[in-house]
Length: 78
Image (cartoon, rainbow, N blue to C red):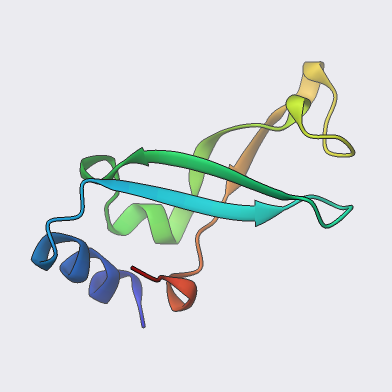
């Protein structure tokens, strides 16, 4: 599945909110959610630049906390 297929399914199924799940360096599960209208083709190419990694143990300090979360469209599930 590619990004365009994911976007089509989001539209076809009237999905209004998307959760992005990821693990930290210790294997602990985390999530970031956003409304589906904020997701487009560029999301899958450039990633999401709204991840504040300073709140996740083992990631970045507060001074350099901005990270990019790049979704993998092959893992999309409804």
